[in-house]
Length: 220
Length: 238
Image (cartoon, rainbow over all chains, first blue to last red; front, side, top):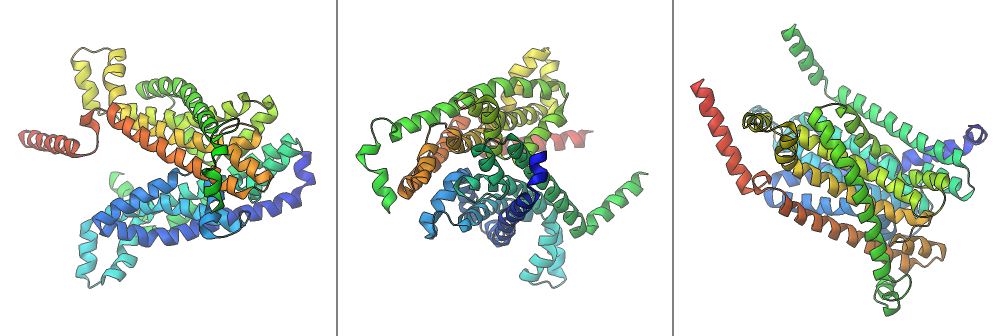
């Protein structure tokens, strides 16, 4: 505990790094996964390709991907960009499938109703299909965010791991308190972010709560 | 493309620390971990699924695992137990158990209630139902859990090279300390290949083990179509 109190400044700067390293990839990954998922859902053949490719990318161990990416990107092997790109790749791999599944589950009646109201395909996607898919996509984003927060720490082996540096530093200097504090902070950060995402989901889908209230009123 | 030179250098294919040796070590750690994890997780998951007691713990442990940083767990166990294989092995088992446990639990739990009723109606006892009906029906989810566990273990065993374990991760860690980047990249390619091949082999094994009636594909769809038709007629009759 003393170690934590004496090193609050160090921990705070690692925490900031950690949040950037783990959450920027989730945002990038989501922005890429939505159009890809849309494409996968539209074209039957494309779906098999996208889903299988995503599955393949997801099997690649994190440390291997961190080290292997520079060979493809031409970045330096110890460049923090590698960690951000690698985690974005995982997020895309996870979310493409979720987005495709979520869009597939949109009731055809809703799509038909939007079409009948004169919505062109793009507007129909943005204003009807995507909002309806929010709960399922958000469940995927929560998994991606929590995984990303935990995976960043692996980057500390090659020098960029946010809070993971508390593990490598604690290992090299034999400070168990530092390692334990690191684990606790990572888990707490994951829980907090998960909770915030859950809240965002509630705010994004007010109709869901209204429907639940109506259902409760009906049974009461 | 230096790493290709490293990868195909004959000197790296025989002797101490050669690619075949590291590969065998890596597969050995993974196999040993999975053996221990399956012996712990399958009976426990089956019991919890069969009795329905403590299910929330299983789901919680599987979800909580995602947040747990593997490197931190490895280092903590090595600091407690000391260098050697035991600390990392405990960490690997710890990370391998939850997916298998959750898969077995969910598999047994989600067996169609009418199937279990039918087995009971035929006079099968609790134990017979578990081994003859519930576990075979749960196999797709159990093997699914094993697959994600194996990937997790291959990945974590790589990181465990940082705390002194052998295996393919050595190339990445040793390459880093000597700034031998071709070695690092070659090592990471080998690890990625191992993970992809292991997943493909397990997918094949899954196909062999799981009863054809339970697999997604032509047969299932036909069975499901038949099932819905029969329930429709039943509904009409009622």
